[in-house]
Length: 262
Image (cartoon, rainbow, N blue to C red; front, side, top):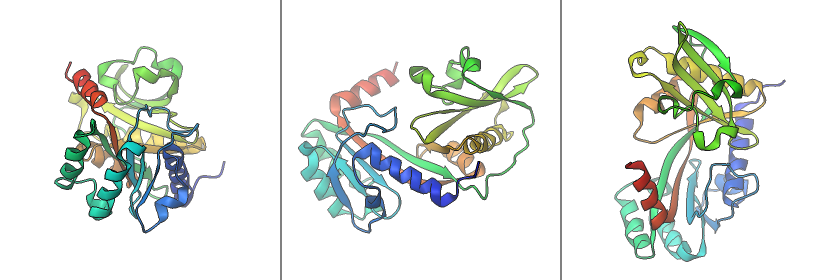
């Protein structure tokens, strides 16, 4: 199978973002900010959950804001008020947050996404034995220590993984979920006592190659503040490619915060 190029990988990601929002792929390449009506496509990422009041996405050229009508005026005013790359920053976000609150909405998720640079994915030797794992191997691994690698709410999407073993004990684990038809998302966990040994990057980079070898696009997501995760992405051959910020009804955000606090 012919390996995807970096250009093809980014084109696939942009088409997927368009499917996720209801806009055109070309919108992300414009030099102008674009507001469109939000519409979750049939092939949207499978973890997206409505209601989504607005989603801001930037691939570094502009911002595309897919929004529902009830906040379209605020969103339009916001993206005209600041440079597109400042729309994801405080204190500018406070301007939007204050006005959203008056209508019963809040900023919810914010994340940075990475794609592989196929020309620089390294071959990193792991200090421990590694094994390729499939869905049948995951059954007993839906545990808190592997919650980044696997998702118990979407077990059917977890398709491929690589484990690092100290004797027969799993000490590091990278796995991916088939979040959309052409793109598989990587998550990785390493037990605390085994960190700082290069296990995460060895597993992440190898899993990226395994995914590419199957004709799919691996992608990686982290919060801006998760420096450890961002460093792993870069060390594993990934580069920052796009950012997202999502607005949801305030009661949904409050519910997420309530669950997280338990």
